[in-house]
Length: 376
Image 1 (tube, rainbow, N blue to C red):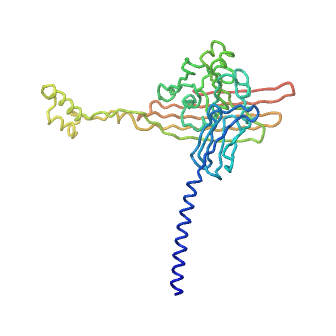
Image 2 (image 1 turned 90 degrees about the vertical axis):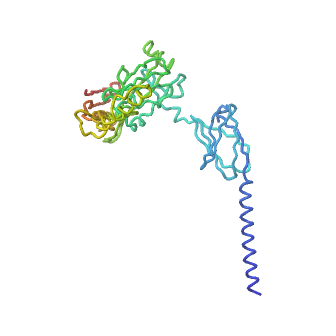
């Protein structure tokens, strides 16, 4: 009797557990709620259209409309992450309140970011014209021999075209909004972007429309690419070495017919035109077997002249530092480009050296020494 009661109790407990799990699962599916709200500027109260609302830890999200309103399916206990360009991101825990009024505070750090414009610099808050800024750190990570090649896709409105991959001449031309060749300014003077080592560059700003023409006149009518090279910083000396080893290949390359294949295709075309074949079967077989290479050659000229991969390497050594009176930056770079020809007849080598020293003689006098050279 006790054994039967014990078995019945075990079955009852098991049944209750199944029912409990069922209701828990049902409860989870029912717990989905609709959360809506509005995202505004904390100071002005203006709506922020296009703000991103994402459920933290998932890929589910939404965006605010033109009036700053949004709606998203969520659950209690979820965390909403709200972000908007130029504002401090905010996180909100979902509770009983399903109508949220979110006020974002402006990010003073991003607004105070210094941007080079014309012959000076300003903060992002003062920019009213079209200006794009390229992250200099990104340039160092792209395995290309020329800085101009690396600009593709890094700035809106900047069209980059590479006409050749020949070592030493593989630089790209670039236009701003397809208006024509842009003016390149390096440290306040016209220069060649491809003569720079990526590690020498501190910032790149792309000026469009009135932002360029207002300062550079007719020369800047097609837009201006402004490059500011690195300078020293106050602090202990920092020695940095970087290198990159890469391989290059053709984007596309045709595969040519062998001598035997060429003979077969030629004969087939003649037969289709009701003409006699040009090569006999014995001649085609001689081309295929290679038994008589003098009279029936089958030379792979592409394989003899071109290889699949070209090798290139870049090395860079820089030293920077300074005190309260003097700061310095010295950079040495080496670039070696190999071609895809088997004899490497188009190999190219480039050496870069840049030195920047700033010394405060007194409160009213500052001495600046700049040296930049490239070989060849």
